[in-house]
Image (cartoon, rainbow, N blue to C red):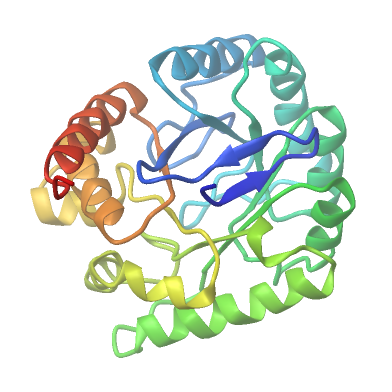
Amino acid sequence: MPPALTLPDGRRLALDATPLLMGIVNITPDSFSDGGKLRDAAGAIAHGLRLVDDGAEIIDVGGESTRPGHGAVDAVTELGRVLPVIEGLRGRIDAPLSIDTWKSEVAEAALNAGASIVNDVWGAQRDPAIAGVAARHGAPIILMHNRETIDPALDILSDVMCFLERSIAIALAAGLPREQIVVDPGIGLFGKTPEQSLLLIRELAKLKELGCPILLGASRKSVIGVITGQSVPAERVAGSVAAHLYGATQGANIIRVHDVAEHAQAFKVWAAISQSLEPRP
């Protein structure tokens, strides 16, 4: 039986050879790629439904931008954005909902409203209580590496490994089993240069040493723009697909994307080719 994440309702989300696609629903005015695009709950719900139709196997709902220089929001504001969307999508889709937040208060309310996964861009180190929230609900948690500042001279792979080891220790101490913990290197301007982000994608398999499934999210990120010269995030789709296909060869279990249909098509072809290259019995 392949490894799997167990959801609060007892369902198992299998992590097999082809990565799961996590579709992004940002209800924010200032996200780097699609800020302001989804201005109300109705639009966000409709977008989430489209992503599932396109092939998303998880829907990640976020109410606070994580781009550099973003405007911080309090928990009340964040909950006012995400709860109507979670409540509007639950029961209408089979794909589990993930809450993209670092705040334990928001995670608690979102899980009570129907979310099944916690996705913390600060790896349970900004608000460690979030790990206990996930544990009490029986929800998997995604722990992402992040930094306040960029240091081009930093050994970024070592920094990511040490950070995630601390995050995993927090989650384990809160009662989460290791198989319910997903790690994310935090590609993009989460305290990293473009060169450091590229190195992390190239060395993604190193994260397997942590003993947890791996999420990769390079979708429309600035590093893609640096390589391709595309200054408009929405025009970085092909580059994002290329980065994610490479990540799949290095062991990524979940791919977090804006453009689900394009990724679904690419991974169908990738899977077909991969199977055709397997040795014949």
